[in-house]
Image (tube, rainbow, N blue to C red; front, side):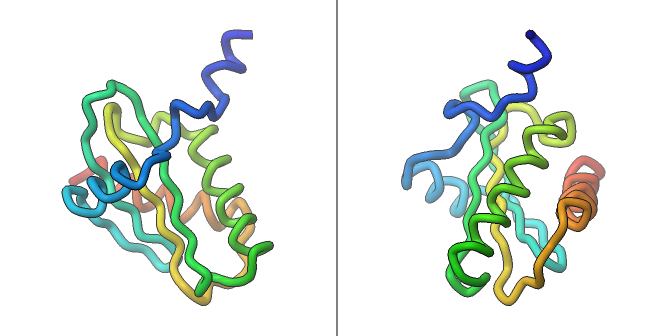
Length: 118
């Protein structure tokens, strides 16, 4: 049962307020890849939080929601890659082709590997 709690994606693990997103945009460190831009910013909460931004330029609602689901799943299963006590904002780039979960894993693992190796 404890394993399920560590792999869940609870409300407390999300960046939810506009002010939180604005702080990340202003103070965060940006990294880019072919399909995503990530911004990481320290927080005082002691936990990792995820925010996802997918604009209409990325596609219709079905495509945008799929991208968000894939990123949330990556976060849920790969928490160890994310820095502790940080807010992470993942932004999808425009005109993105249909991605598989494997594509998302490859891109984000590469981005967070660079982040850790800074």
